[in-house]
Image (cartoon, rainbow, N blue to C red; front, side):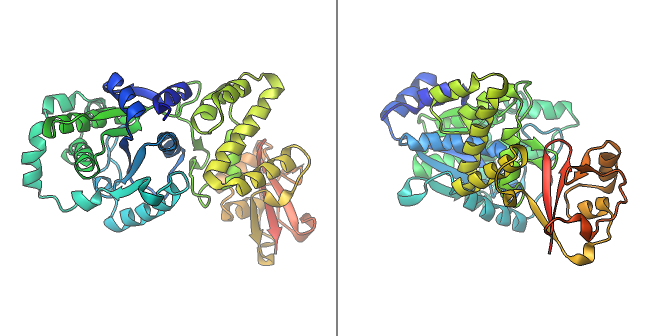
Length: 407
């Protein structure tokens, strides 16, 4: 089999790794079982998880076996990595709901048939642990001095302190790797670069306890040309759940990226050959828009399917290219009893704007229009005569459109 290490390196996934020569040899000569952990802190994965799923997918396509570990147990504690404050504590019921939602999403990216991949929940072994036995057996393998030097703990110590609850997280994650090694011969952990300290802890634990080889590779985080995390929208995270971020909104996020930010997601979030990635990324001026359309289409196709990607592309073309089917534009319906409401009140009720004050600012700045006519009075009543064939097109700012249909 071809070595996935070279593919991952060329596409820009790899950030840090232990035992590089051993990893390259193992990935070339063996069918490696590896895992990535996902804590179910929400009922959907977001674009930050998507890069991990693509990392996992490339490994599987080259013959290696993924374990998707859902952190039903570790989510009870909360990962302090990259945090300046303590995570919100989740109930067991909420965690179970989130786990079931995430499982469904993962099946879009990873083939779990015929034991080609494994899906496990660390709550199965963490929630019934005997704490005294755990601390004697596992905690004794850890140096507190070394743990406190880890970046995930050090930054928290400098910003208001670290709870003992969170201090246990590294032990729990390391123990996950040990359990997976014992049960499934899992020898490699993959994850985001913010997990480096936790991942090293797992590698060291297996090497001490089992006297076996174990490895870790981190994936670069998805950042823009200025080094900031990508995937944030006006509504918050860019979710993979179509109910939280519609396929059209998802498509438009990638379509509207700054020119300098096109190459990294083309390499990391699509399966396009790298020669094509480089060609598209080298386009300049107006031509770079073609690269953005390809990026938006390819990423939306992977996450939401080809049909939704085509609809999103058609909607964008209808709005910005002056041709196409407008029915694919994000649409809200209202009944006739809503007629007479002020436009800002209506948009707020439909959750097209967050607050009425946001709507007023939009009107004052000339950023709100209906069917290309600027709204000049935020109390303007929405009346039946505004609707052409039962539809009005609301535009916020330069690029955000919504259809409102009168039932």
